Image (cartoon, rainbow over all chains, first blue to last red; front, side, top):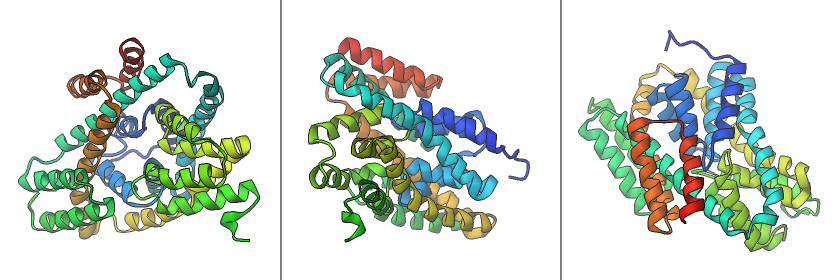
Length: 179
Length: 178
């Protein structure tokens, strides 16, 4: 990554502010689109790494991801700025919505609209998973790792166990050149 | 008195959410039962019905899903309660993540690090795909909702427009058809 242009603190701030404010139903698809596809600050592999670490460490996933992202280029100030950028503006919006919601909570059309947003947002998360799968090298070892992870999670295995088992297996296979 | 049982609402919010922060492996939503017990049953800051409805609202609203925590803080002690609750849920995990980030940077070129990155990618893709499957299942109370989710997947993979179009489209379809 020697030829990479280092984004400034202001770049991080404005980009993550926008990601936070557009992240209806979950910010991860919006974050991936901005960081990997549009700005190209992260490669597909780097994003996947930050995401899996963000999921395995305790705490909110996206907060962990932006902490690692900000720290990489700008140390602790970068990490804290990124957390602030992704949380603060949407928090204001959410609290404003909550304060008017009491009057509308029983209105049927509000419920129907929220159900529609939830269905679309769920589709976006699934799309993000499919995109990440398609970006992998198409090798037997990759199918085994991704398929095994999906099967184990759907069967209800605990997250940390799944992460540990399949990451260890993946490191073994990758070290032997299987993908 | 134990800090978790403090009569001071800010201390109670801060210490309880700091504790929960370190238990939230896999994201803030795994903490729902604990937050319900603490905010609804023990403290009575909101009713069970409010808890469910505000959670759904915080999910649909823009921003990370962890912002539901700020809603609990807001119900307990207004805007300052919301800020204290967010500080509590975000700071312990952030400190831990910073330590991990530090070592990742230090060993960026180490062979084990490159192997780790390779192996984490398919696992992360699998985990997100599973979350997507579970969310689609949860949101799809009827065939129409499932159709909306499926339509989003197909159109997005084929054309990759700005995801906000889908959110807007979902809101309109929900309004008209559900």
